[in-house]
Length: 90
Image (cartoon, rainbow, N blue to C red; front, side, top):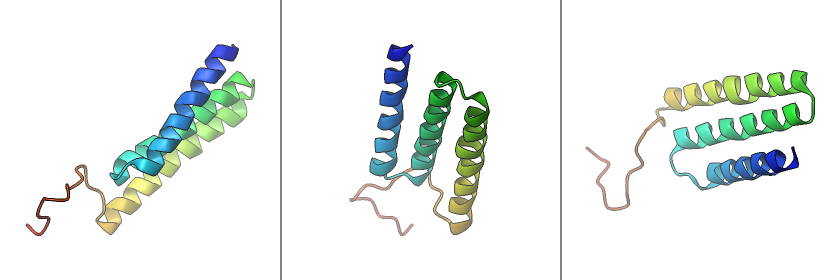
């Protein structure tokens, strides 16, 4: 049980670090949703399934959807990140 918790915490911290380091905003939103799912798994391990379900629905589902729709509305939703040498004026 303790080993599973350590693995989940490590994966959650890795996803949180990815949120900070990713240049692609959609990938950062996906990583933020992964952080929320990791927290939900931790709540399940702590025997709080009601809090875990709420965290999974609100944190991973609803927040990710709202952020992705906001990126689309602002015109920032791109799947590729242009490299420094590419011309983006096309």
